[in-house]
Image 1: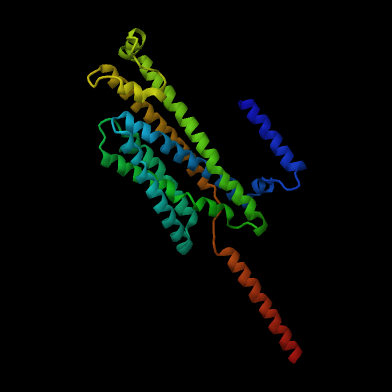
Image 2: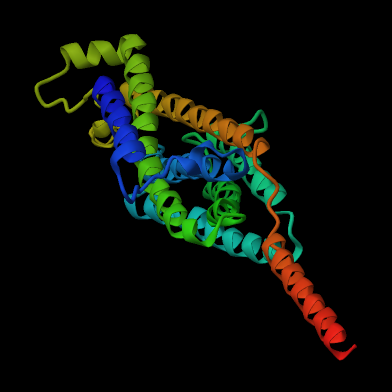
Length: 304
């Protein structure tokens, strides 16, 4: 699959660069240093939705594993999404009024690793004993970081480009969430699945139960079946605690993966070009002033 991906990627670049009359991804957008915000924001936005879809997909599963009902687990994703929407609107309004676009985008992304994992806790330290208030609070912090950079990354990619390039850039950057979501669910899911299986296999109690359990046993090493496996066991069964502990440990490793992705985003933000909303307007106004001055000078000459 990786070989096929590499070959198809090279073929796409060749066709786009040499044969396409109207390329969907013109190479000039990715090779000009003055336009570097375009590829940087494409990657940043992809990684941003890497976080988003992974959180939305795996948080409800994790919450059900630690004992919450299906309805409550699904509802507890709302604080994350609500805060993301609020912070996105607030950052856009603030940036358009006061500027500091690059700083605000970078600060928003910097909140993401704080929300996902740190020595003081947050999402990576949630476990079967965590309260709903703690879960909601950490979700709000993570949503604040995600929402702060959701829409402004699109604006950063567009600022400073010629008008005839805006439609192409908008389409490219707008397609990034789909790619990011696919990668996020797949990569974080792989990390959680592998960590869960390894932990369960290392447990002598769980391994013995799986190998020598009764015919009615529904225990599976597949993390997709972890909720049904836990539900089939009595609360006092030691295997149940092993499965919960294994999934909580796997969840933490998934959070650490998202922290690494957030750090990559911060490195990319450090390479961004300065973003100035007023530069194009000032240039246009300056040209108009120059034209007016030329007209005045010509009128003076004619009058003289």
